Amino acid sequence: MLEALNLSPLFITVMLLFMAIPFVIIVFSYKRYSSPHKIAARRYAKGEISFEEYQLIHKNLSHIRHEK
Image 1 (cartoon, rainbow, N blue to C red):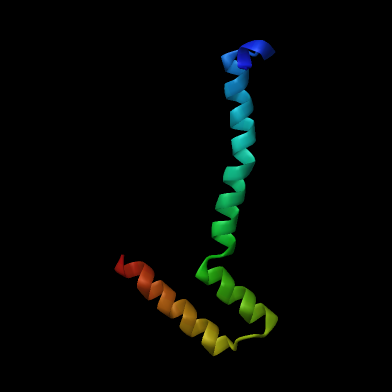
Image 2: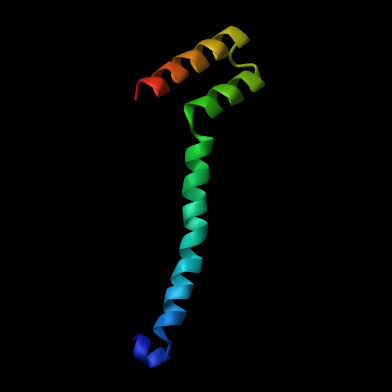
């Protein structure tokens, strides 16, 4: 099929990279957006949790991170 289009392998490689870059960016930004720290910060900013609850969540998450 690619022979019929007469596309060079370099062109195909470059196009695949350009198509993959946005996907990789989306995956990493979603992971950062959905981290427990970010979720707690958003919930505190919206007023869904108190400052004390936010501090407790942050403290517990920091404790877990240091155990790894």
